Length: 201
Image (cartoon, rainbow, N blue to C red):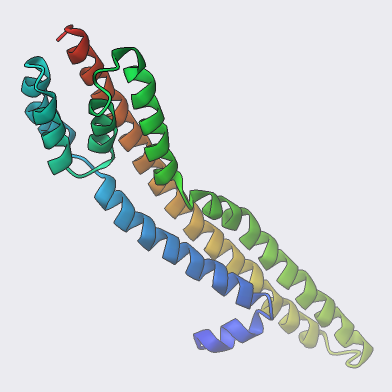
């Protein structure tokens, strides 16, 4: 049985499920590109930054952050632009980190929705298919194979819905872990930055 035949047997609900699966793939690709640009080589950044911070070379530190890609360097750069307002430095870093985290979290909420919605759409398709299968008794009394075949076709929708939900869950889980890793790097870098400015390092 070809994919198109199987798709048609799932009923009309297969179209929104197909749309959901394409949406998941699109989000996965978009987030992959974004996270690749948001990643920062933390150890390399801090190794270059610490001597500048220790010497209070703020323009030099800002240059290091500007030349380094990633969310962590952008957060530190936000702090360096307001380095003379030391009383507000911590809140500046916190606000910048929250903004970067929000950007990293963008579109992940849609995956949550698809994880919940896809199985429900699949079940809806199956229920509709089973209702149509049971109605076969009205015109094909005495032919049990007619109803069992119809139920088998109706279950295609449930299987498709579960597959889409599993795909969305895997993508969401992967990028949630990536998000946690970047946030941890930001917290570590901000701690080093604040300690250096305070003269503790």
